[in-house]
Image (tube, rainbow, N blue to C red):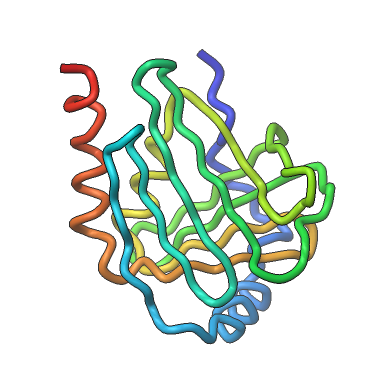
Length: 160
C-alpha cells in the first residue's frame, strides 16, 4: 500500500519556514471552537473557525480516510504540493502531490488508507496548518482530545 501523505524531513520545505508559521499563527484571529465528532453515517471529526473548516473522515466500508480543508474566503491554488505542519508537542510536517480541489477551489481534499501521521499530528500538538502554494489554513487543536479519542475508537464500532 502506497502512503500518499509522506513525512517530510526536508530542510528546505518552503511551506513551513518559521516566518510562514509565525505569519499563519498571527492570522489566526478566531477563538478556538469546539472539535466535534460524529459516527453517522461515517466517522467524522470537524472544527470550524472564522478562517475555515477542517474535516477528517473514516469510511470503514472502503476503508478510506479523508481530510478536507475548506476556506471561508478565497480559494486554494492549483499547486503541485499540499502540505500540513503540526506544531506544539510532537511537531511533524507531511506533504502530498495527490490532493484534489473542489470545483470552486474553496476545499482541498486528500484521501488515503492510512492516516497515522495525520491523527498523531492532531492528537499530540496544539496547532495544525495546511498549505498549498501561498495559501494557508491554520487550526487550533485546543480541546481536540475527547473528539480524537472517539474518532480513533469509531472504526472498531463501525466494523462490529
